[in-house]
Amino acid sequence: MAIRDIVKHPNEILEQKCLPVTKFDKKLAVLLDDMHETMVENDGVGIAAPQVGVNLRVAIVDFAEGQEPIEMINPKLVLFEGEDTDVEGCLSFPGIFGEVSRPDHIKIKAQERDGSWYELEAEGYEARAIQHEIDHLDGILFTSKISKYVTQEELDAMIAEAAAEEEEQI
View 1 (spheres, rainbow, N blue to C red):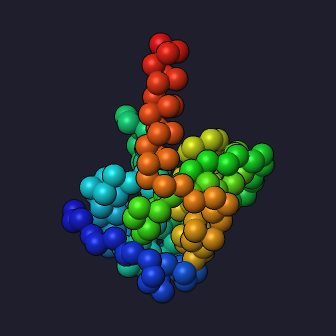
View 2 (cartoon, one colour):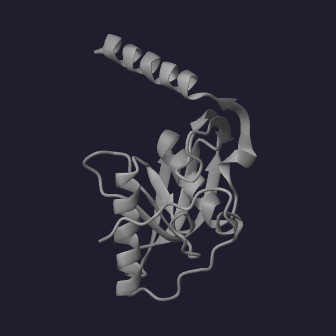
């Protein structure tokens, strides 16, 4: 496994629709392993292949400790409903954060690294992260969906407030 460089905006690969994966081989497994290691090293919760310079429909979401990462190859959004607005950031846009509205409940169909198909339903933050990564595969940048930019200071205050509320509930 290797840590790869994160492609930063502006770079044209970030705005291209990615090609479908047709070969499920050792090269794909290495890409998935490298992407996961790169994402963890950069404190991300998701990463898409174009963010490491590869034009393929491959993405990973991993934010729940103790759970396996969600590897999505050739993912398709098959159901989306509800709406939620929350703050997002992106490894390809360091220091940029903004409020983005997305469906709150989704279902995807995607392939595993061995090529087998699976379906997954997700809600809340997990659904948001999955949609953000699928957008990358379609060349859609989260900055095109931001309704309000948020500074690092505002984000830090929101995180501190959420942590304090969580502490009160315990």
